[in-house]
Image (cartoon, rainbow, N blue to C red):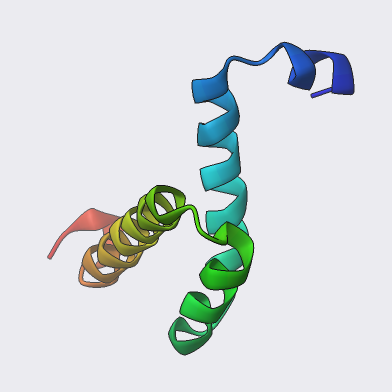
Length: 75
């Protein structure tokens, strides 16, 4: 996405993009470092921090579920 398109994004789209970008960065960290990262990246925006946390938790849970599946998605 170019700079012009980014400037034309709606606030909800910008927020969603921010959440996804922060999640992409945080997911690469060890779980114990994620809170430190989120504190620095989100600052006083507790709602943003909670949204990123929720997405991280959903990803972690889905990865745990997927790891229980055998070949061809069977248990």
